[in-house]
Image (cartoon, rainbow, N blue to C red):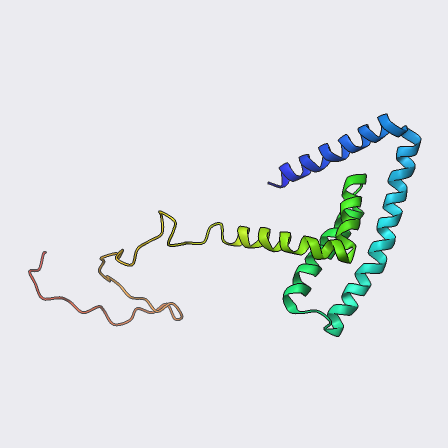
Length: 161
């Protein structure tokens, strides 16, 4: 999964750089990359402390604080990654109006990932209440001390030698 994300990142950044270089030239592309990176650093330097102060002051609700913190962290990481596309997306995630628009997307993705493997009555492999395992206890050992407890009661019936 991480390899796919890294490959997609490299391909997108290369495609953006090649397209910009073909369109505006190599020198202007380099200046644009540096300018966007500088703007990203400034936005991160302003938004990150503001967000932390808001968390410490209790300005936001808990659900919004958690999702905003994840988006601010992701935006800061994307700003620090080299590349024009990642820096632009990072700046957008750090900007509060865009962060408010991205919050429902983050919530949907998180809920989808959390419930992907959870059992559900609508799934065909969901165990019914009538499933049980018939068994017999042969030995009981106390886990804390390692000493055997009293032997299990024997059931009446024929004995086998």
